[in-house]
Length: 81
Image (cartoon, rainbow, N blue to C red; front, side, top):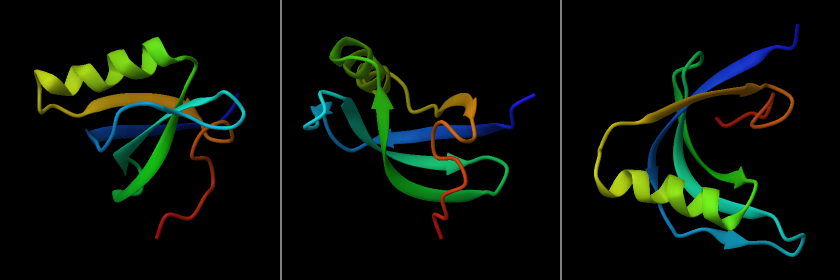
């Protein structure tokens, strides 16, 4: 079974942006739940619509959004210290 990491997004800093590879990103304040670390990072999205809808969730709520991802797929083993 793949290792899974739990994260919480506490805030978005910008609207979605597209990079040179046609990937969509949103700069967010993220918490690594297991480590208790907070960091700012660009979070990937499949398309503009999903990135935009994610950002809009913070328009009406201050609650963090929690999610799980395969550790090697997302923030993985990166050191955010």
